[in-house]
Length: 241
Image (cartoon, one colour):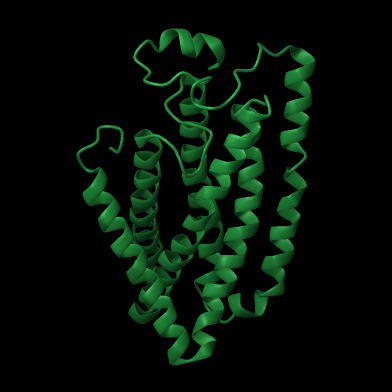
């Protein structure tokens, strides 16, 4: 958005300077080009996610649904990450978000709450859609439940990545970089690696016996409670919806 976004937003309650972050000068071509190269340089990191996935491929081949669910998880988590990064970047430019993780505005807290609830809703929807497709090619009801629980548990653990995306946006803003350019490419690659690891952990938990099953359902239960609390807290906020 840049300075023009600041001029158009006359109702903003915070000025970026007051929010604790420097307001960068209008960047030139070389500045934007170098930042774009920096952001795109994180792309090859997705190879690490592929290597991680291949390391637990023996877990994937045990379950008929595990391979089909993996790209859906990455795509869904990328969607959620894109919304978060876009809102953070805009909020920093117009002064509605401070570049601080602990001492931030109500708008930032509402954003995190909405992302949490959105992640829970989308994981359930993803599990339901994949179950309908799976039943058509022989997936049993028990396997459909196991798949949905695994997807929700993976999404629950991946929500721990929200602070990293926020810190990345805040750090780039404080160092006079454009968070619109830096935040999503860097956090998307890191999120792919993190989510792949989460998926491997969730697939491995059933091999621990009853303890692993309790852990999986415990993660899902804690996630559901957190989503309900976030929904109760933010349901009256227009920004939340």
